[in-house]
Amino acid sequence: MKRIEFHDREQEMKEFMDILNSEPSLITFVYGPINSGKTALISHLIEQLPEGYTPFYINLRGRFVTGYEDFLNVLFEIDESGVTNNVGEYATSILKDLKILSGIPIPINLFEQIFDKKNKSKDMFRYIERFFVEMSAKRVPVMIIDELQVIGDMKIDGVLIYKLFNFFVRLTKELHLAHVFVITSDSLFIEQVYSEAVLSGRCRYLLVDDFDRETAAAFLEKHDFTADEKRMAWEYCGGKPVCLVELINYEKREEKLREVLRIRRGQIDQRIGILKDVRKKILFEEEEVEITYDNVMKTLKRFSENDSYEYVRITPDLTYLIKENILFADPANGIIKPQSRLDLLAIREILRRGE
Image 1 (tube, rainbow, N blue to C red):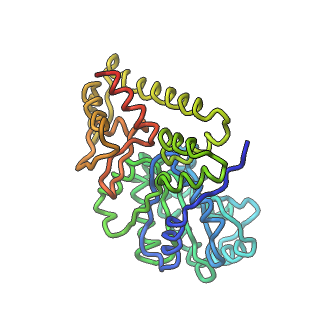
Image 2 (image 1 turned 90 degrees about the vertical axis):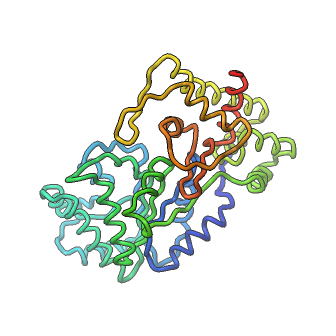
């Protein structure tokens, strides 16, 4: 299998570096459709960070976080060999062995103290703030949390995620102490955050979308695609990096494209068709709302001619289609679109069959 190199994200990298070269002042939400390359971009950014920055990359993807202890184990990198009550000395010692950290380093005795105390979240945030204060004398902390929505419903004396955001505001806007990046593919989570007045004027949004046509063509050309193969790849995959990468590893590319479209059409058909047989309800604005086949199809019909459309509000039917990773909501630009070109083609085939 060929190794696929990082490809042409110069504009996004420039936006990241412009943020990092300024004083921390806002939370940055990095969002986009699924498999658009957000994590790959962040990984590349971390590798390219100049001296003077210390990245803390915390990835919640695939982590089984059901309670406070699970979250602490993900958030912190426990140093079982370190025992100290002096956070300043500990932060200085960490700098001597600089590396990409997968959590906030903490001596085991301080970790146990935080976990044992009643006001857990307050002690957790106090430690991180003190650690960053000591570290910032020599380096700028860069805190990166991937798939934060995983803890969206977790509560510790209130909803934990709101406590986290308030703390992020303190680190950025109030103390100008650390850069904070929150990465997610969950557009409903972004929509919720975008509409929260508490974050108004305290965050920015950075979209990492699929490649445009020119970038996708340049990527494929490096792997010896013919003009016809590039045209066909764009027709089926659009600029979805994961789809293009998969295509590179096949010789019978047209056959592969038809196969992935057939599979995706079947997957979407199943998620929509099930509504004919099951009275499915979803939680919408804290109420259970029934989703019907007719209403969902009415929503999808908007894509029979258009690739995207502007929206005013998220409806229950849109919520269902977004949760099923069929549609993507871009709240910063007020746009609804399929998650990929492949999804758009699958939707149109389903609509034509139903006519």
